Amino acid sequence: MILASASGPDIVMSVTAAGAYLAPAAVGQRLSLRARRYAAMVAWLLHAAVLGWMLFGATPRFGFAPALSVTAWLVLTVYAVEQELYPQLQLIWALAVVGAASVLLALVFPGTPLHPAASPLLPVHWALGIASYGLFAAAVLHAWLLRRSELAIRTASASPSGLPLLTLERLTFRFVAAGFVLLSATLLAGTLFSEYFYGRAWRWEHKTVFSVLAWIAFALLLLGRARFGWRGRTAVRVLYIGSLLLLLAYVGSRFVLEVVLGRTG
Image (tube, rainbow, N blue to C red; front, side):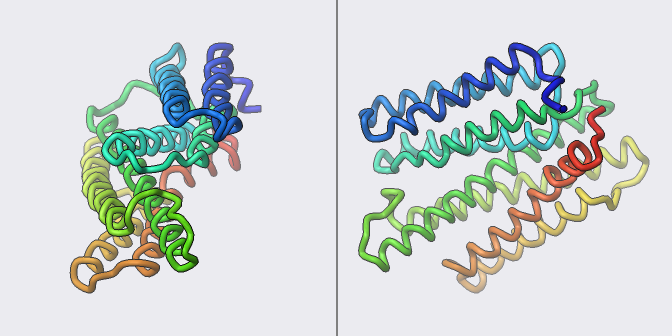
């Protein structure tokens, strides 16, 4: 069982962080808005501590589940910042469930041990890739809120986000544009790293193919919005397709290696 590689501190910190996410969500409206925000901040800090221990602890490890955990933490970070900029933005407890699930998943599947990088470009490549994951995940979250808000308007019910449609749409495409820049930088860094380490610029493997397909999907989305005014359902569908392709690139390939094939070393 992959969980056997987890240490005592790993288990205690991960379970505590997951509990900190879920407890306020279970209590719900019985807490004041300020208390719920403080509770979410405590959970966020505990999640950060778990990630720090995972990456810089006694045995640093990384894999598909830790990548999802970092992505969830980045999305929660973005959402927390937005709540300071837009106080009317409502808390979404589904994010707390996602945060708790990502922490526990990384506990069960901690990934493979990290070794010293053979090239200084490799940590840059990883950092850019994870950051782009976080930004596109934030874009998907806002696109989901956008679609729910549009549905609420049609049914004459309250908006689930508390933000106007135009604001949500603008934020969604800002995250897409920023994520596209970082994804482009990730592919460039990966190309340079591959040339430095393997002597060739491209290695056409599973991860590379899906990353390039995702880059094409996001490029089409930004081009379609700039030239043809894509918005609404069409834009959201392209965003979902590109995000799924990007998810299959690293997370999908690592899941196959670590879980399906059982290569944990």
